[in-house]
Image (cartoon, rainbow, N blue to C red):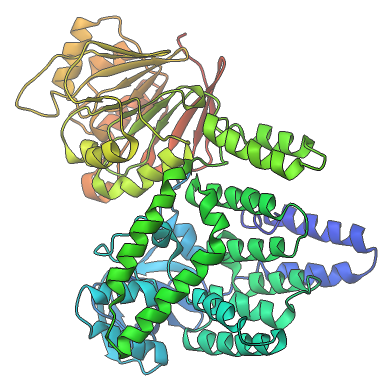
Length: 620
């Protein structure tokens, strides 16, 4: 646990590990432990701005490559067919890799930084020398294959994802790591070879594959574990794990390390093996994927070799193109997608986590692991990880999306959906909150940055109603939403729904891209209008936030949802000055990420994905 938190609390974790080691051993071996622990804080790669113009390609992805020169790694965006291990020449201005933090979404900046990549470039890229490594030749061979097989082979053999390969099952998230081939071969060798012979063959094959593919994490972990630990030897597992963490500092956030290590350790247990497998795999699925599927954990021993089967089939197709892997892959994906029918959405990260931990620690007796497993699923099913009502302003970039939740997910209302490219982040957050069905989806107006995911949300979360036109009042138990405007004109922004929502004693005003004319009309019809929180109209554009509107509304807090400043220049300096002049504090999703207001009785707590925290008052 300390190693998992070392990036956030380095000194505390270092002191904690060394202290525990000293208390457990009572000798001077704590000095060696301290030295090994300190190595984990030494950066493997330089974070200085790159100065090279030529470099070797170490990784190839669908829209970018990773180039290496000396101790410097850099990310380079390109659509050109660049081969791994080739030499490239680049021209352009380097920029820091940045991303806005989120509660549950994928943090691209963290992903890159953990792998020693700190800079990116969008410029001219030219391959000046071909690759003659084995993996480079394999990649070149794949590029000579016709579509759609080419996309399938790239995804299976090199994990280069393509928009043309649509997978909806376990295969979409697991990738097709070559380590699955080792699991498949191991199952086959058990039928014909003695354990010692099988171990030697497995070690040799692992080393060859790791050498060909430049020692990726999945193969490096297997190689280190095979060298240090025999099949029935658990004593050196800690040493093997530490060595993996030294060589691959990012492994503690990688499913390709956590899941195999967890299954390896539990397979050596004698008691409650199935319950422990389901419990710990459920915890990791919650943290990594915001969902739990017990069947995937139980079938891991089959699914992992299945990846190896597709890997071997794809490799064979490159040289003997008799049986295309595309048809078999799609049919298998269709069958495995049936497992998703028992998915439980939810993440451990929520206000209910302390209660879950305390109850787990208090459970004792012979059936403790079964009780903990039941407790985990009970928390997920009932929404106890998120037991309080809350309003979340979701960071969907240049767009709007606001989630209103009653306690325990009794009902969830989503206002606007953001652009289509924000779907993954939006889906991750809804899954992380444990939402499986929306009670209502409200679209303020038909602009793509507000309704771009309407169709996908309707299909995935099946809202009981979809509201796209003006209405008078909607009440969802303790959540009351009124539309204060009746304007219908040729101007879509001016015709936006003008929503006033009340939940747990707090009031919110959410009006899409309504302009100053619409604001003035609403104030004329509702002269005593007030809201505790204002979602600033039109992403903080100068066309909104009229003086009379702000003076009448008197919000205690403003939230501005917008994307990159360099594109739309939102929020406008004029709007920001209006807020500052009236001493209205404000948060911007571009800087703070997701913004949640959690309502714990009379206490209203604001939390942002960037780590900001505040207590709010309310008019109620």
